[in-house]
Image (cartoon, one colour):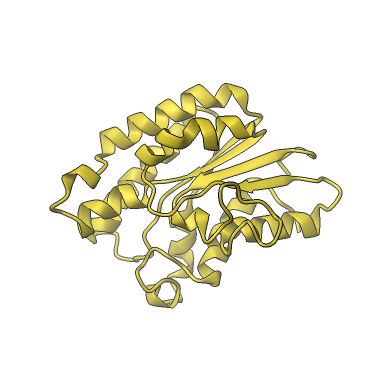
Length: 215
């Protein structure tokens, strides 16, 4: 497995990461990691590698865009002093352009998204043993659907940054695409974004595969 024993892994993102985690810092005490993929990743790492003592911290915050992450980066990432960092952001950056078209102040255009995320990655990568970048996704099988098409473009940006900064790339969109061959999107998430436990398991499985987790 890629993550070394004794590592501190911080995961930051939006509501998909947050998932009712404890504030101000979500840890594995009293279900402080929330009810989503972060908790599943922690549970499986603990069950399979109990001797490696990997500490997981959930710093997701619902509704966040990459600009919100930038505003809290010092307190919620740098001050946490992670060995490994996982970033999953972009869903709201795209979504606000569709559900709030009359509020351009809430929109995060692709260039702003790329530049902001790259700035965060560039200044943080040298301090880390490892970096994981997870693509945003839409649980929608039609690649031509406008929001799905835009989400794919933002995801390609994340992939390119992962390659540039020697990060592990987790393709959450591709993971959902596989499952959607047999399941309707609404069986995973009523709004195509916020999944139930099965959907979070899809993300957790993709995450664990990317870090070379072995059962």
